[in-house]
Image 1 (cartoon, rainbow, N blue to C red):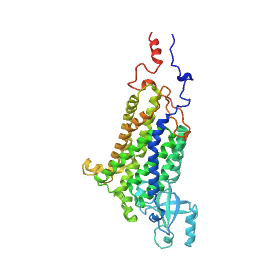
Image 2 (cartoon, rainbow, N blue to C red):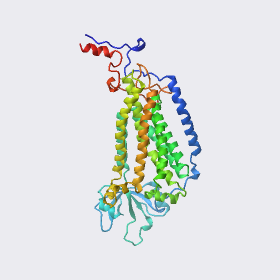
Image 3 (cartoon, rainbow, N blue to C red):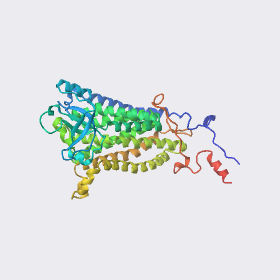
Image 4 (spheres, rainbow, N blue to C red):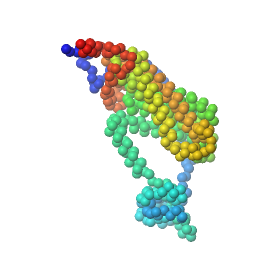
Length: 456
C-alpha cells in the first residue's frame, strides 16, 4: 500500500518553503504601482509644500534660571521631613555647568562634595531611596545670602541608566528573535521618529494645517516603516493600501469627532501653556493630529497581519478561490479585532490609573466622568482609532486576496516590486491545508488518493 503524490508543476523539483518564491504577475505589480505611485508623489509634494521653515519656529523656552547650573547627585542619607531636605553626594558636573560657573566668577563644584538638597514634601512622603540618582539645580546666587536654605534644589530623578539598560535589552531581544526583520523594524522606527521631529511637530508649531500635517506624516511613516521592515513586495503593498484606507477613515471620522465633541485640547498642563508661547495655535487640530498618529501602530499591526494571513492561506491551499482566501483570512481578522481593542483600552487604563482612582472618589455618574476633560479626549481617540482599524481589516483582506499569487506553486511571499527586498526574507512555514475552512474536502491534488487508500 502506498500513497500517490502530486507531481511538481512543469516537471521541476518539489517546492519547499525554503525555495525561491514565485513572483507576482507583472499585471498585479503594475496595478499596485499605478495606485501607490500617485499616492507617494502626492505625499512628497505635500511634504515639500508644507515643510516648516526654521525661521518660522517659535523661540526656544528656557527650562531653568539662566544663572542656575545642572548637577547630578545621589541620595546619601535619610531625608529630613521637617526641613524638606535630603543629604546627597555630587557624582557629576557637566562641563557646560563648570563653564557657566566660571563665567559668573563662582567657585566650581567638585565631584564627591557633600551637599544638602531642598526637596518637595511630596517626594519625601513618597520615599527617597539611598543611592538614588538625582538631577539637581545649583543656584550660585543663593550661596552666602545668610538664609537657611541650601543652594541645591531637587528637580527630578536621573533615570538615564535604567532606561538605557531596558532599551538595550529590548533591542537585543528583538534582533536575536526577529533577526534582520527586527533590525529593519528599528530602522523604520527611527525614520518615523525623524518624520515626527522634523516635520510633524515643527509643522504644528508653525501653524500648518493640522489635518494635512497628520495625513502626510502618517502616510510617510507607513511607506517607510512597512517597506523597510517587510520588504518591497506585493504583500507589503497590499498591507500599505489597507493602511492608507484606514488612515483616511481615521482622519475623516476624527475631524468630525473632534469638532462634534468640542475637544479643544485644553486638558493638560502642557496644552494650557502652549497658546501662551505659540499664539494662534489650533488646539482642535492638534487633538486631531494626535488621534491619527496614535492609531498608526495598531493599524500597521492589523494590516500586515491580514496580508500575511492571506499569503499563508494561499501557500496552504493553492487551489482555493479568492473568495475562500478572503473568508478564511477575515476569520483571523475577527479574532485580531477583539485582542486589539483590549490592547488599546488597557494601555490607556494602565497609564492613567491615578486619574481613574480619583474618578472613583468623585460623586458623579460614570457617564459624566467618561465624557469629561482628558478622559473624553482619550475615549474619542480610542473609538476613532478602533473604527479605522476595524474597517481596515476587511479592506486589507480583500486587497490581499485580489493581489495574492495564484496557481499550485503559489508561495507565501510575492515577488518584489523592485529587484530584491530591503531585508533578507525568512522562509515561512505554510499552514496545513485544513486550516482554510470551506476548502474542497478532497484537498489539494494528490491528497485525495492518499486518503482514499489509507482508508482501505
